[in-house]
Image 1 (cartoon, helix red, strand yellow):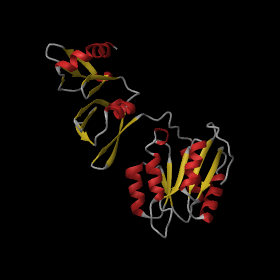
Image 2 (tube, helix red, strand yellow):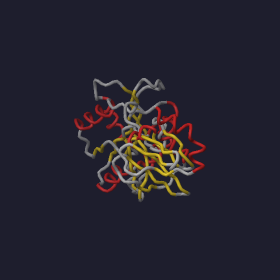
Image 3 (tube, one colour):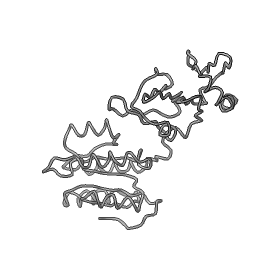
Image 4 (tube, helix red, strand yellow):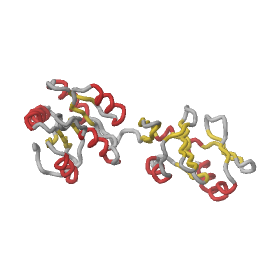
Length: 254
C-alpha cells in the first residue's frame, strides 16, 4: 500500500486494485508521480483489503484490473465495480479499468460507465492525463441521474428531464421530456423517489409520480392534468385526485 493512513475526506484518495504485485507497485509509482495534484494512493492485490480501505476513507478514483486472476480468467474486478456502483456514494465516481481485452472493455463502457481504460504496457503520459482529468471531476456538481434498465442495458436520464413515472403492478413506465413513454425494469416507488429527490415530484395517485416543473393546468371536473410540452393530459383517478388535490394544486401554484 502507498499513501497515508488518514481518513480525511478533504484529501482525494485513489484506490488501485491489481492482482500482480509487480504490476501494482509500478502502477502505484506512476500515479504517485502525477504531480502537481495532491492525493493519497492505496494499492491492493485483493478485494478484501480494498473493501476494508473503503470503510475508512472516501475514494475519489478507482483504477481496477478487470481480470484480477489471469490464470482463472475471472472478472472479479468487473464485479467489484458493479457492486460499488450500487452505492449512491460511488455511483458517479470515476473508474479507470486496466485491461488488454476488447470484449470486457466494451462491456465496461456499456454497463458500468467507466471513465476509460489503460493497457499493458502502460503509457505513463496517458495515465497522468487520465488521472488529472478524473481528479478534477466533481461528482457533487454532476447532474442527478435516474438509473434504469431496459432489456438488461443500463439507461441514464437527467432527473430534471423526467416528466412523470407510473407504476402499475410490476410494470414501470417513465416519460422523459422529448421522448415517448417507455417501459423499464421494475423499481419500487421508494427507489424511484430516492433517485428523484432533487426534483419537486408530486404524488398524483396510486403509482403516479409527476414532476411539478412540468405541471401546467388541472381540469378537476374531467380529472385531467395537463403537462407542459405534452399533447396528451394525464387522466387521474377519482381517488388519486381526492387524496392528492392539495399537493397537486400547491405544485401548480409554484
